[in-house]
Amino acid sequence: MTKAFAAGRLHRPAALGAAGGLALLLAGSMVAAVGLGPVAIPFGDVSRIIGHHYAPALVEAGPQGPQAVIVLDLRLPRVLLGAAVGAGLAVVGAVMQAVLRNPLADPYLLGASSGASFGAVCVLIAGFSPLGALSLPVAAFLGAIGAFALVLLLAGGRGRLAPTRLILAGVAVSAFTEAITHYLVLTSPDKEVRSAMFWTLGGLGGTQWRDIGVPILVVACGTAWFWAGAARLNGLVLGDEGATSLGLEVDRLRRRLVVGCALVVGAVVAVSGGIGFVALMVPHAVRMAIGGDNRRVLPVSALTGAVLLVWVDVAARMLQRPDEIPVGVITAIIGVPFFLALLRRTDRQEHA
Amino acid sequence: MKPAALRIDDLSWAPARLAGITLRVAPGETVGLLGPNGSGKSSLLRCVYRRIRPDAGTVLLDGADIWRTSARQVARSVAAVTQDLPGDLDNTVEQVVALGRLPYLGTLGRLDRDDLRLVHEAMARCDVAGLARRRVATLSGGERQRVQVARALVQQPRLLVLDEPTNHLDLHHQVELFRLLAGLETTILVALHDLQLAASACDRLVVLHDGRLVADGIPQDVVTPELLTDVYRVDADVTAGPDGHPRVSLRIPPVRRSWSLR
Image (cartoon, rainbow over all chains, first blue to last red; front, side, top):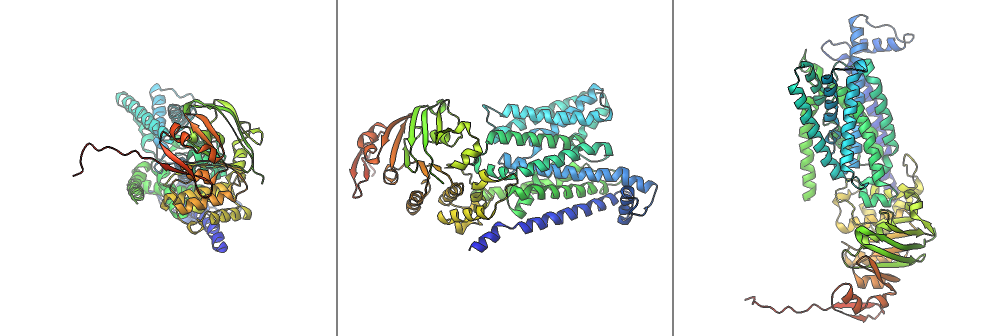
C-alpha cells in the first residue's frame, strides 16, 4: 500500500517527460512555422539561415536575398512573439482560474483587451505620439493596466477581494470601455482610428524585432514568479477559510497575483491585441491531462500555449492567402466549441 | 510537539457582536464551544485561526499575540477544520491532504519523504486512505469532512480548531472522529451543536449567546435545563446517564389541532 501510494504521489517522471516533449515540440514547431507562409521556405534553409546568422562559424550560409529577409526580419520575430504571447496567456489563465476559483475565468473578462483598445484609440485620436512608434503599444499597455486597476478598485470592498465581485466589476468595466471605444471610432473622421480595432481581435501580423523584447521578458519573468508561488496557488483551492488556516494571507496573495496577471496580460495585449480563449482553453486541457497541481500545470500550460499559438498563427497566414485572418478569430472558432463542452461538463458535475 | 495554551483576552468584533470575550484553554485540554445559530461561534473561531482581526482584545498562543506573528508561523501551530471546503474540487484527496504541509514548504513547494509519510498516516487515521486518488468533487459530505480533518492533522497542529466537524458525519464516524481527537497530543477548541455529544467528548464546555460567553465549566455544570431555556429557548429534561454525562430529552409541546386530518 505504501508503495502504491508513493508511486501515485510521484507521477513526476510523467510530468517531466511531458514538459520535455513539449519543449522539443515547441522548438520544432517554431522552425516549421518560420518556414510556412505565403512564401514557403524549406526547413533546411530556415535552419541554415537562422543558424548562420547567429553562429556563422558553426553553420554554413543558407540562401541569401529575399528568403533571408523573410526568415530573419518578418517571420522569426513573429513566431517568437507568438510563442511568448501563447505562453503568457496560458499561464495567466491558469493563475486567474485558481485565484478566482472560477473555471471560466479569463483575463479579458477583467477588461484587459477592451482597456488596450481604448488606450490605443485615445492616442490615435489625440494624434500625438511622444514615444514614436512605441506610443501605440505603450498606450495599449496603459489602457489594459488602467482597466484592471479600475476593476480592482471597484471590486475591493473593506480590504477583501471576492472572486464574484471581481468578475462582475470586470464585466462592467469592459462593457463601459468598449462602448466608449466604439463611439470614438465611429464618430472619428480619421480612417486610421479604425486600425485600433486591431486590439479587439488580436493578431501578430507586422511584428518587428523592436516589438518583442519587452513582452518576452515580461512573460518569462511573470511565468517564473507564478511558478515559484505555485504551491500557494494550490492552497487557494480550499476556499478563503481553508487557505487562511494554511497560513496564506488570502486577500493580499490574491491582490498580488491579480496585479502580476495584469502586468503580463498588459504587456501581451499591447503587442498582440485581445487573442481570446487561449487563456481559457489551455489550462483546462492541461488540467484534464495531468491533474490540478499548479506546480505542474503552470509550466506545462506555458509550453502548450506557446505551441498552440505558433500553429494558430501559421493557420492565420496560410488559410486565406494573400490576406490574413486575425488570430483572435481562429482562437475563437476553436475556443467556442471547447467552451461549450466545458460548460456541459461542469453542468453534469453539478447534477451528479 | 507540545500542545499550546490558548488565551483570549477581552475580545470584541462588532460584525458578529462578539464582546468582551475572555477564554483560557489549557495545553492538551478539549473545550467545546456551544451556542445557538448566529451566536458568533464561527466568528470567534475565525479570530483564533487568524482569519479575522478583532476590533479589540488579543488572542495569545503560548503568550504570543497571533497578530504579531506571521500567518505562516501561526499555521504551523494552529490548524482549522472549517465548514467551507468547496465541493467542486478537481484535486485528488491526496493532493488536498498534502496541502497541510504548505506552512512548512520552501518556495517551490516540494514534499520530501517525511512530508509524504505524514500525509499517508493522516489519511489512514481519518479512514480516507482508500480514497487517495479520488477527486474531491466525487466524495460525499462526510468523506469530505474527514479529508479536511486529515489535512489539518498533516499540519501537525498544537492547537486544533474545528467548526462543527460532525456535520455530515454518520454516527460511526462521529464517534471515530472524537476517538481520533482524544488520541491527539494537542489542544482542541471545537464548535458543536449536539449538546450531548459535546458533553461526553469535551473536558470543558463554554457557551456563547448573542456574542457573549454566558457559561463556562465542566459539562455537568453547563448542560442544564436553565441553559436550554435561557439560551436555546427550549424546554428539556436533563438527566445523568449511566456514564455520568448529561442526557438531554427535549419536550416538544403538543400542538392543539384546530382542524382534523380526516
